[in-house]
Image (cartoon, rainbow, N blue to C red; front, side, top):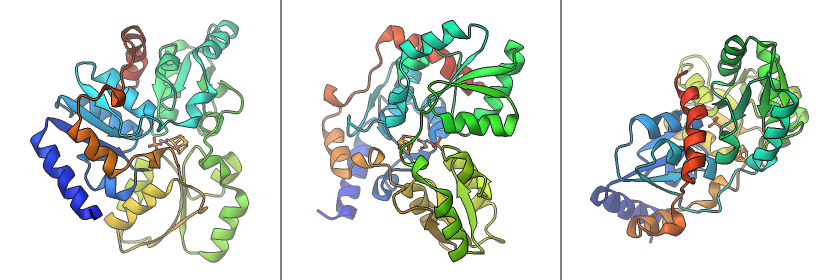
Length: 313
Ligand code: 13P
Ligand code: SF4
């Protein structure tokens, strides 16, 4: 079967079942094409909470994203096409580690990046994404009348917050990082600038400070998308310092521009573990429990609070 035939089978099955398909910007483009909604992690959480009313949600993203959708929709079935699609960053932080930090710094609020497991979120005061991390940190400082926050698991994102807001972040752990974004080097950016002097350089805040400092824009995937969308008349060339999937989306939506990946290794293999074949299988086996993402009730109840606290902002 060709990709187009498989996509048409999927769309047909979707129309006959009570299903919504959500896909992150990092998904292979053929999956983005059959999704009901595409977005960054904050956007997809909001859609999962506010716009999804089907009995089933198929979430093409890494596990923590599907877990968040499930926590926000405990009455619905959230399915993940490949249950092995996990974000390695989430493994940098365990609930035990968070509790240790809590003991050492009892007066500092705990901010947990959504790229974390549900049982880590359950120990947090609030969650954040790369779209709202600065805003959320400022909010917590005002609310708790303190001058620093506990922040994990991404030490680069914590450092970005610190750089932009001037608020100290105590990193949980000291060196948590994304294996995709942290491989981008100053040398890569300098090389790209030399080859493409007119291009604007967009990088994700999960990149290291020395890389962020060479970029024109630092922002989440949705932020980068909006930046390109709002500069159609004056910018025509971009270096993309995030995962390949976003570049593919931009190429389709804004084909008049030229895009180059900042480093050709910026592919998140975990995001790419899903496929059209797996989605087709799921649509034919919606009740196959092997693919359902279900957070135990007690953990889900506790993790819901910091997620909802984030979504209120
Ligand atoms: P966004 O919040 O920008 O979608 O990023 C999620 C992510 O996993 C980045 O690596
Ligand atoms: Fe996790 Fe990095 Fe992949 Fe994002 S790109 S899902 S942070 S490993």
